[in-house]
Image (cartoon, rainbow, N blue to C red; front, side):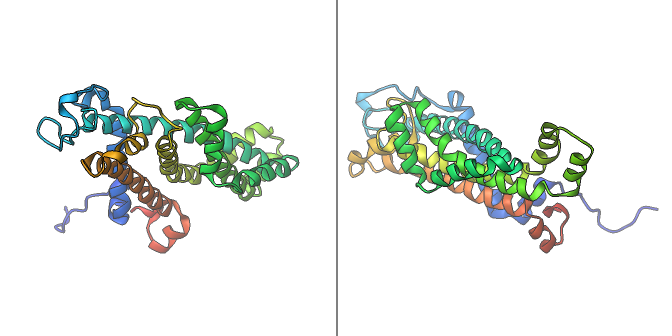
Length: 294
């Protein structure tokens, strides 16, 4: 006989995440919209982002140009969408490269005692300087351009991953399953890839979500200073720099790319914070929910 009470609809992890971390869920929506805008920019943009129309310069938002135009008559909506595409490319590529190099160095330093000192001392030197200073120095040496910006930001990200991976390896390699693998004579490569690396991926993924907004801001800062992506390529930092002289006459040319940059950075930050809380076992025990999301 079927019970007469109200039916219980099982909730998946995503629904539970939205319920328990509402601000982070809002950030997740912003992140998804940002990624979609970047990937679909060629199909979403109503005009060519570099098409100049001298008869429609500094036009306010209208039906023809939903976000208005800049000082050269270029459609701001199209340029913002392509700017999202450029920011997505720079942030994912630079953070991805930094993660691969940094995690590899951190694992080597944590697992092999002989490599611990040299790698971590060099890492401490890099961490002693602000990231933007390191990026500015590297771009000044290598020169302007998209590729050099990606290299500079990737190098800035490496020390963060080295320090994180190093600490995680030190906490994992003394566990019973790693000691058992060593006792039966498993090769180091097998121990690292089968036992150590899988148990460090959670915090590394969370760290990546928190470092992406920093990479976006660094890229925008370099472009704002004239050292990053060069015109006429659409990039939010470059759009802000070129809008300064027109800010009084047409505030929208500065507000729109600045607002886009602010929203994306906010979205990644709160989403990363929520993801960190959801994956923290201490917080899962405090909330009394399995996996932190039930």
